[in-house]
Length: 359
Image 1: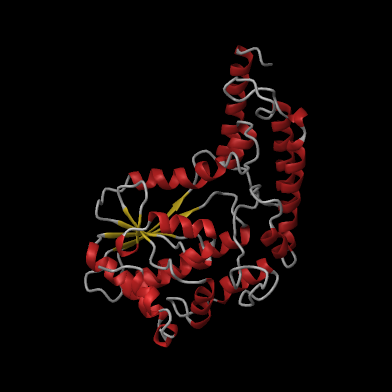
Image 2: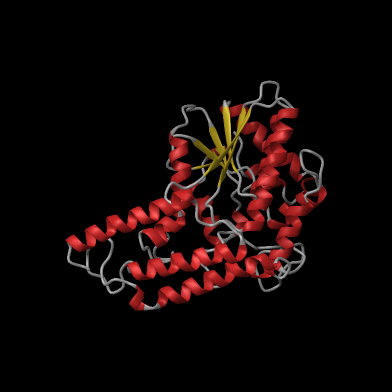
């Protein structure tokens, strides 16, 4: 039986300090040997943790005589940080070429939400996502992934996720409270989920990216530079006031309102002026929806509320500002499906609200 105690026990050894990659590969190899999956699913965000996990998993699979299929899953919310999203697609393109060159059984799956952010905000008049109502996470990321996983017929498939205890206190609690044997973690799914890199620290992650080349023998400098730009300093320099060393930058959607200030995006805009219009639109939207006059006194289901969904006038105002943003920047934000779904939603909501004498 392979347990995290193997890694914890050897962490204090000098041998471990120079052989962390060997231990991670051994963990992955043992999981494959014990559970014999026909398919390994690897969620890939483009960030540092998923990159390290992906690298080590594929490197291990290459050494197996009868390797399982590798399925890379990338969830595109359609409002991702433009820099990290561009990096992700470039990385996946190189990865696809590597897979083909090595005759690996692989699949790269790009998931996108059926109900987009703009359909929810402008079409349905949802409030901006907040800590009490994180509708964006469910709609844009969780549901597309769940819907895809439901189509998987391989009951012996496994999922490797790049979670680490060192990320945060809440992450550590999640892993600890749901940890099973052999690096498995409890999840509400018919598939088995594993966390092979859960005991790595942030410093371990950066050491790996600096000291290793990509699978196709190029440098990991691009991802290092992205984090460096987001942090505004070298990602290897620890922040004394913070518990974790290295770069704690996280990349989310450019419209994310779960944080007061998107420091990563703001720092990146110092070298990428194209990001400024996106930052300004986000700030404008936040201030605009603060006005109670832009909300009905009813929720979408017709029940009274102190601050309900956005009025039609407010939705149309945000729509107009977003179209102006597209014209000024040349950036395509709203798809043809968005335009169709938003207008269709307005008609449906108008009929419903009229039937309830709300308007």
